[in-house]
Length: 367
Image (tube, rainbow, N blue to C red; front, side, top):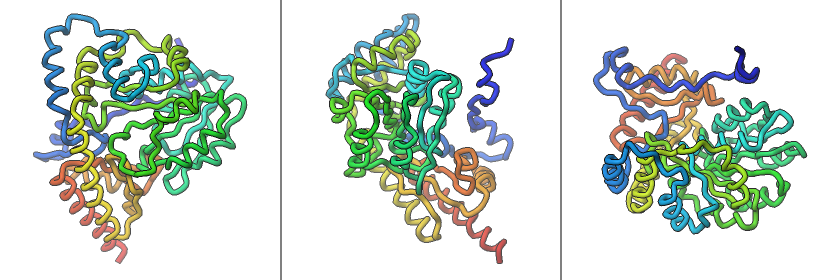
């Protein structure tokens, strides 16, 4: 009755407490959740309209091939339809890749800290995990290259990286890809792609021809605001997609998710508006950190990692009692930092005020 031995060392994902439960526990009327990198502005009305239209067909299984969405997305991205795979969030595409390529005889290379699902799924498959520490929040690409050997199957690049928000510039990415053996899969996880404003961020789709071992992951959960529906996708050479498709569960994306994603792709204005608001809000946090002399990582995503110069859990508890839920860095590999999702302007200003009070209380304690 024992599961795989490697599962015994893993802990299931624990979501944060429901907002209503936190309200009851702390006696608060308002709770603002800035912990899960959700879009504070919701999703496009076009996506909502597509969902409503689909409600009459809930008794019908979804299209297992996601043909309508596949056609729409392939045209939107400028890739062939057979270069796409869809998942229950891009998380599932991570799982599919691990299922398809990893085994106890193989290893996989990733940064640390980074998105934890790479490691989690590799452990389940029994693969050796080779983690390369970040340098100032950035991938150490040279060290990652040195970690690759004949047993390496997948290298993970989280770009922008979660939880730091740093990105890999185009030249660095291209030079890295040139040096990776052609039989090693390189996954560029671009969950926050739509938020990126850096001019030298790599347009990875343009490199799929040059590097047939490249897999790109993107999602509708973040900027598109469809996190509740769980739909993401992978882009790669058709030979890779064909190889991993048997590891995908049938009907793995719902009718509602597929319909909403189609609507979301029709609303570029919504994305551009969210991107600008996000960029303006990040500047508020930058200004605050610089004013207080706090270390932070400039972010190309919709969150910011800030050093609160104290135990991260203490800052987390302080902010939660003020009605703001953030992500403690203690669980992310940054014990003195907190990750804050960029929220609406009002909420960003309020949490900055609370942070200022918290930092001030630390100074008083020292004095």
